[in-house]
Image (cartoon, rainbow, N blue to C red; front, side, top):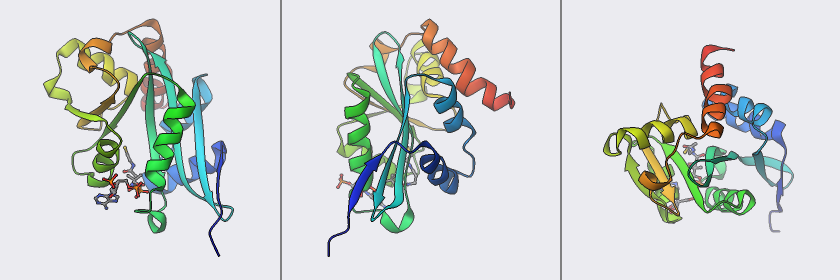
Length: 178
Ligand SMILES: CC(C)(COP(=O)(O)OP(=O)(O)OC[C@H]1O[C@@H](n2cnc3c(N)ncnc32)[C@H](O)[C@@H]1OP(=O)(O)O)[C@@H](O)C(=O)NCCC(=O)NCCS
């Protein structure tokens, strides 16, 4: 019998999966609670939540979609669920530009984004102003690599009022425990 796959926007289930892998959900929760254009997607197999993503849209020079947290339960990895999750988030978010950050030792994540047409940039390879704007827009301070699809990071980077507000509410304040 085939397994039944379903998609939902269950924020609670998404935070549980993210917490199980990342240990903390404070940034993911802050985005969902404080940023109006944020979403959670959950994939379930036979009714059990096994993959989740939290993503949001923010206006830089153009509106970009940020894949913030994406996780597939270990026993369900390598079967295309990560790819499906990111593709569904792209479709749902509906921006022309997509961003993600990861660490350079995370081969599955790098493969996932590169397989979907994202280009990698190292933070230190970007001009300072662009780097600062994109770090704020992604809260990607713990990561080494920025992935971009749909545009050039040097052209789209801009610290708009939205980026400043997003950074303050969902990156800086949770970092400070506020
Ligand atoms: C990254 C992650 C979401 C990928 O999920 P997944 O369901 O295993 O991914 P998929 O099966 O859709 O595979 C996507 C691509 O990654 C590749 N991949 C999957 N696991 C891999 C591994 N262990 N090593 C190398 N490549 C891997 C697949 O071959 C596929 O590549 P292709 O498109 O060239 O065929 C999953 O490994 C995970 O939850 N990791 C922990 C959390 C994390 O790192 N999230 C991303 C942070 S940005």
